[in-house]
Amino acid sequence: MEYFVSSHSIVRKIWGRADTVLLIFAGASAEFALNKAVDWLYFTGKLPADPIGRLFSTVTYARKIIFREKQAALQAIDQISTIHKGVEQSRGANIPDWAYRDVLFMLIDYTIRSFELLHRKLTGNEKAEIFDVFYRFGERMHIPGLPENFSQWETMRQEHLSANLSASKFTVDLYRQYKKNLGTLRFYLLKQVQILLVPRRVNRLLALGSWSLLAPAIPLYKLARRLQLDKFVQDILFPHQYKQQIRELDNPQI
Image (tube, rainbow, N blue to C red; front, top):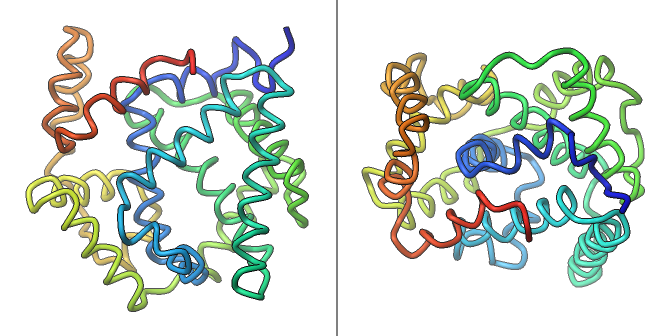
């Protein structure tokens, strides 16, 4: 059976663990709040109403692409395209091409950053493999102006970070919703995780701080994972109603 992502791919390894997936979206949640096209995420009202639920919805789509056979993955990508086209028609405008690229660039970047934070440095070939998966994703969505290789992506990523991010009223409101949904303590921990993950410009615009109190805890979490206590840690970090969804992130058979 042919898969969109090879069964031996590093991408499957990264997206097949709850902790790395949750880190990917912890980082992306920071950058989404700053993106100049964030108003599109507010248009339907789904993101501010339930940002955590929206996270798991996005994860589900991403994992359909990564773990399913090729045709099913392509259908999932086409469904994503259809959803976005519907939103564009409802609003009577087009989502900017750069906004589509930004989402892909975030997925590439935080996939790399999350794995390296919890595991080890990725090789050049592994990074190129991660880029290739999301490049094919974007190509299927007919997103124009995509970089052709990982080196070009690195350059464009920096350009997008400089040009497409800005703190706004949406930034303030989205972080308010994060706090409302997570609670004060978990919201604080989210920001501490973001300090460890996000690029400097994202950190500066959000004024997250230069040092995370969780930095010394990373080695302890790695030990907890070896002792199979990582589920206990995850239960602490997320509200009880998301417990089952988090468990399912460790099962790639979706």
